[in-house]
Every structure is written in C-alpha cells, then in structure tokens.
Length: 172
Image (cartoon, rainbow, N blue to C red):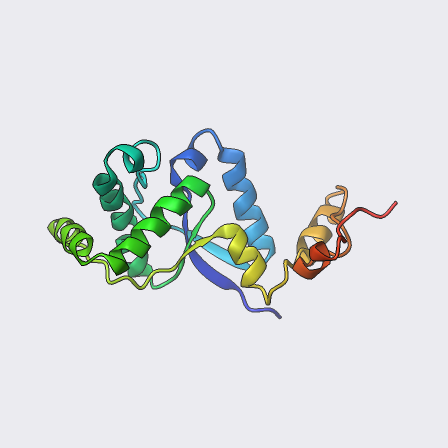
C-alpha cells in the first residue's frame, strides 16, 4: 500500500468565501491521491487582498504569522490560492535573504509568542500532486472513484510524462 503524505493546508480567505468549491475539490482530490491535508490552525489572511501592493511590511507580517504557525506542525505548507501562494512564498524567501526584515518580523512574532526559523517549504497544491508522487500525477484512484460514482473517467494516460507526449485526450 502506498504511504500517505501529510501537509499543513492553508485555504486562505478566497477559498473560505467565494471559491468554496475549489477548496472542496482540493480536499477531495488530495484525499484520493493519498495526501492528508491538516488545515492550519488559527490561520489569518496572508495580505494578498490589499497589503502586498500598498503596505508590503504588513503583508509580510501577516504571512510570517501563518508560516510560524505552520512551522509548529513540522510539515510543509500546501496552498491552493495563487495570490496566497505568492505572498507566503515571497515572505518565506525574503525572510531568508533579508536580515533587516527577519529582525523586524521576528520582533513582531515574538510579541505574539511566536517565532519563525525558516524551516517551512511553501508548496502549491498542484506542485504536491505532480512532483511529490514520484514525478507522476497519479489519478488512477480518482478515475476509479469517478467510475464507481458513474461519472465520466479521466484520460487513460494521466501522467505528467503522458501530458508532455500529447496524451490525455479521452479515447473515442
């Protein structure tokens, strides 16, 4: 039996609101692929909605809090929303590169009894699907589940390599 993978999951504001179906789909597909998503406890907005373009430091502070909370779980952080992924990744990168930002953010986190050591890797959930399953997008479980539910199955060669060869069209 294939081992299950575990990630801390950051749904973000948009998936909690208008994109609820995207969140539900992400959770269902992850489960089908043997990926356990544990929602980040007490997460907050990453700052993508307004701060990154207006008040970059505030956005880094918001994102850093989420990174610090994820670091406590000792797992990588899986993100679906592209704006959240960008903000969290950017903060993670800049915290490693910019000593001044690291000190400023570290002081703010300390005031909240948090710290961030930079050990979290921020992953887009599609990256997890493709690259953390042996370089292949394994949809056999999804195909089986969809077929069992009477739905149209996905294409027969649902691998990353198959897509590169032009495979992936439904047989007629």
